[in-house]
Image (cartoon, rainbow, N blue to C red; front, top):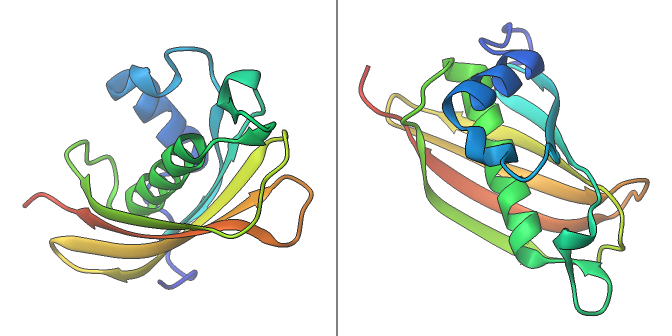
Length: 145
């Protein structure tokens, strides 16, 4: 995706859209934050909370999966605008290393944006770490306009 294009939705725009149309994203407290967007890219942060841990003191797979999915959705919205019915059709995740009990960062980028499908990948990091904790690929279905 071209970084020369202006995003159709900024980070604050996406957060406001989710508050209005998807309040369940932060129903148990605001833990998911869109930090930045460019056209076809979004960076998100999942704040650390004990409820995201699994036995052994690591961030759980379902928590990282949710972050990856939301980050991809934010990247899609940055490129197509506020489309509530854009939905995940596929998300695959590879867990690469054990994340510690800390915030998680996700960086999602669109690899291809068509009229009906958006394909992208998401890199997940433990905050402050250079090595990826997980890598995901995802496809979103875009409804007809």
